[in-house]
Image 1 (cartoon, rainbow, N blue to C red):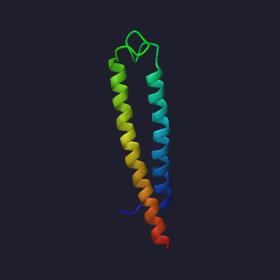
Image 2 (cartoon, rainbow, N blue to C red):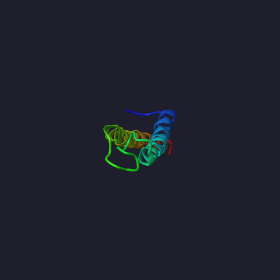
Image 3 (cartoon, rainbow, N blue to C red):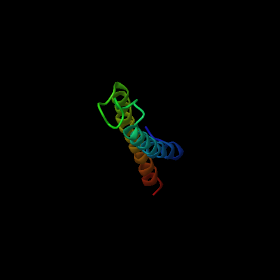
Image 4 (tube, rainbow, N blue to C red):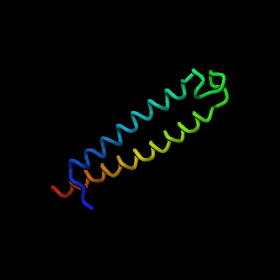
Length: 83
């Protein structure tokens, strides 16, 4: 399958965007002291909310990486085809 250059750029940028968004989310999840992520606040026992959102974050990192790599490979292939 051959990706067009605009599609490759979209996928590569989406991969970077995914890392920025989910890194911020993970940082905010870890800093939560309101009692949702940790029982009794202040990084006590992690709650189910924490584990579910941590799993969501890890999966999103993996998918964002995969999408970004596909976009990057598409860009590199289109560059080689132009030469």
